[in-house]
Picture (cartoon, rainbow, N blue to C red):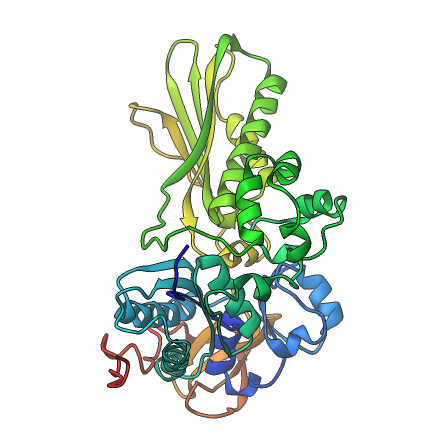
Amino acid sequence: MRTSASVLHLDLDAFFASVEQRDKPSLRGRPVIVGGVGGRGVVATASYEARVFGVRSAMPTSEARRLAPHAAYLSGRFDAYRQSSHIVMELLRTLSPVVEQLSIDEAFVDLAGAGVDTTSAVALADLGQWIRAEVVRLTGGLTASVGIGSSKFIAKVASELAKPDGLRVVEPGTERATIAPLPARAIPGIGPATMDKLARLGVRTVDDLAELSVGELTREVGSWGPTLHDLARGIDERAVVPERETKSISVEDTFETDLTDRRALDAVATRDAAVVAGRVVRAGLFARTISIKVRTADFVTWTRSRTLSGGTDSAERIARVAGDLLDAVDLSRGVRLLGVGVSNFVIAAQEELFDAGGDDAEVTGGPVGVEESPQVVRRPVTGWLPGQDVEHDTWGRGWVWGSGHGRVTVRFETRVTGIGPVRSFAGDDPALRRPEALPDLPGSASPEVDERVDRE
């Protein structure tokens, strides 16, 4: 356990919605919901104005529309989100070479050796406020919540307690008192199923959890028990790791006798999908590509894969796609080996949530070592999506306010223009197009940031 508060956690506030409000002046101060706008859409991020109505991330968009019918519902603009994320992550790397990016809007920073007195709460608070001010300046107005503590867990809790747009420093020695009154669900990894088990033991708060013995926890949650016992006491020995890249996660089964029964193979694929999904969830990842590996009785190995429109960590979806991929392989000769795997990870869960109504899927595969033209099936998203950037020959730059019946309505405004006018056009108007590049932000013009002379 570190003896000083040398771990910083930064979380950009309502990130996707905040980027939209920054770039669309008419939406500032209004409820904004970003995510899938189709019938199967899911909320990726809701602005704080929308959360007042009960809208939350991962909620079906249909339910959000019922709760907040007058909110602005926008599809995602990942180029804009990545632009701002890159600026913030580069800022953090000016503080320390040890930055662990968790997602597009969240990161840990190891402050040891970063030129700040981590034994001084005043110096740490000063550093945290400087970071938050730089985020605002470099991103053109986005805000961040910052937590600083003696471990990753404590720093993460501190940033949650600081939300929105705040700072919290947890001094060494106060960790347990800080987390004791929090709900037990505040500990990463405790989901509904685990919480149900703990509730049977009378656990409601982190303090309740801390009073249980290692043996009691191990009996309820298995090998995770000792780690959970430590976390409930504010003990977390995990290091900040600058590289978290995982290339793929897979499970394979080799059978004693060759299988030809499709139902038996489906059962194996479903079981393996559950194992793979569990590993994906524990790694905090979301996979876009799902693949199978099949070795037949004549020792020919086949691979098939499908790339989805967004990342998933769902065992059901992985199993369903794996089953579909099995349909493309001749199983009549018998199967010696079956594997299910995922890859092509995305760093933000939300990319899975932007469902416009169907998978933009790519299916490829064939026998390993045998040349074969890949089969490709694509269903591209067409038309104008709400919130999308557009540019007009006469009116300049704006965003899609709405579309349908061959028409598109655009509000012409940008981050720096103020609220702009609304105009409608034919959907195929040749003067209207998608812009080729994003406008620069203050932090994108140069990799350098202002040095603060008193940071030492």
